Length: 326
Image (cartoon, rainbow, N blue to C red; front, top):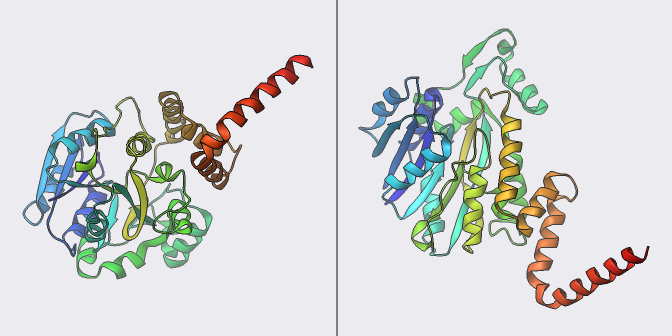
């Protein structure tokens, strides 16, 4: 059994496209575990529309936040293999099969799937990168005078998947572009865990020494998923890139304070894990080192630490003495 877990909150129209895409998977032996974190829209109605077609475990709870909802989904999941997906992601037909093939190798790995951006629903106020904005208005110039518009439907997803996606496709995410540059085995990518976002990862939980959990101290947007992936890194899981396990992130309106929430959560993450690896991530985010430089430095330390340890301590002592003199 493969368990695909997600939490959802007031994204019924996006979740419907996600569920529609799961009805056309080339591999059928999976369950969908959906924890509804207190939605007030018609999420429950949408889920029940598909629970006769798909094997769905659905639970609705009071709003507790994404971390608590994801933990509940993990508890309910019966599968050995776990695939984590967001409620606004449309999986390609080979999504489940590709993740399964990678996990079937028996390696202690976290598979990171490829992520692209689509816009099946237009709403005034959506924020795009300039190139994506030019692309979408060239395709649909009528959007310049509309408040909202549905570009594709769940029926189009089921009957002609790739044509439907092409009608609303924007771009590949920057994260996936970076991962592709390192190859599927992510050779030389010391900081791979920092790019294992929660919207498209898979792992064999039977290989865990201790089952990772989402930390409920993260509030609002961001970093509960990076924390989750880092826990696998600490258990010596490797990370790989699964370019054929694609899901398409549906662009949607965002809260104005998301960046502030992400910043606060990042600060909590750094405090929780006072490790060299996390410090390197922070230096990347702070602009002190590039991502490539953090990887080079991390790989050098990992490979040559024992040879360099005494020399680094000697270097530090000499610097201290010089500073004391001057």
